[in-house]
Image 1 (tube, helix red, strand yellow):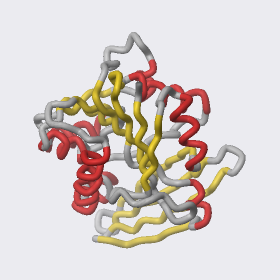
Image 2 (cartoon, rainbow, N blue to C red):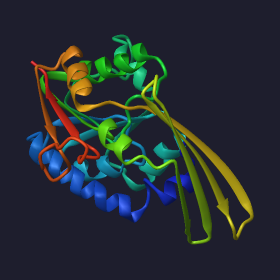
Image 3 (cartoon, rainbow, N blue to C red):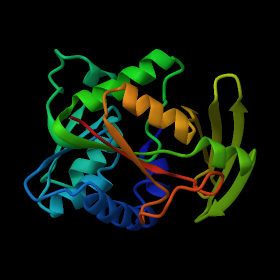
Length: 244
């Protein structure tokens, strides 16, 4: 979905950089990450988390399919390693991108992209298979129970000459949300449209999937401050699972 213009207003913006600093600090504490350990950031987007992990002495590999975002990541971060690959490739034991890491992070609701439940679970198995024995996986996802209680079908913003209208539809049988975004650059007279679809998960469903994928224990946090999960109140829980 992301091109450079859309990324600049969202995941490559100063606001998201500040959020990444808080999220990364929390993950380093909660996952007991140590200097010299290896970490896979998949997908890594613009590298906003990888940059901070690397600055703390962690050896980071960022994986993403979007060449625009990878170019932005490499431009700002020359120390982390970035590779272009599909998340599904992690489930393939013969993939050149399949390595073993001390930790894996999957952030910013970057799971549930496929319409196929089998493919989504293959992604999860690939993330777990990328861990060394004793490794840990962190996932940060929008919570389905919270979203349905706070669902908004439309939103409209105007900022710095860009008019953005977003329309959302919840597909109940598939438990997925679809987002159609129209962005109009008033100064330049250009219009772009974006589409995004994500399968949503409740806490019990996600914990069950993580254990089925091979994690022995899963701890659920309510936010990047380590608070407790509260049903209908927690918007983006963080799941941390441990591999034998």
